[in-house]
Amino acid sequence: MRPGDAWKDKLAVVKGFIQRAPDDGRPATQPSEAYLGYDSRALHIVFIAHDGEPRQVRARLDHRESIAPDEIR
Image (cartoon, rainbow, N blue to C red; front, side, top):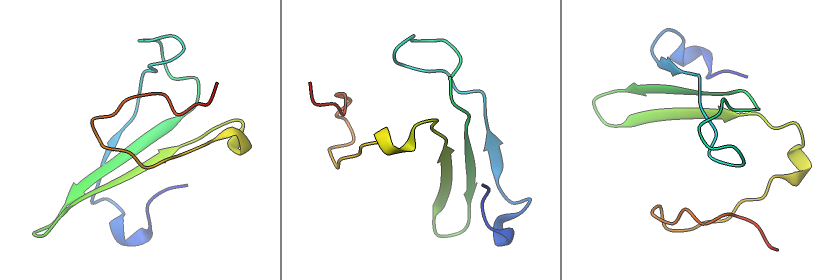
C-alpha cells in the first residue's frame, strides 16, 4: 500500500518507527511508514500502519492531547 500515483516522487518518506507499548523505545513490531508533503494550501500526511491482527484494531475520537490507551479492561 502506497500513496496514489499523483503523489509519486512528491512526498518525503518516514520509516524506522519505535514503539511506545509494550516495550517503550524498542523497534516497532509491525511495519509502518508515513509520507509527508505540502502544497500552497495544505500539509499532506499519509500514514500507513500494518497490523498482524486487524480485527483487534479499535479506534475512537478524542482530543489530540489525550494519550490514554484505547482499551476497555
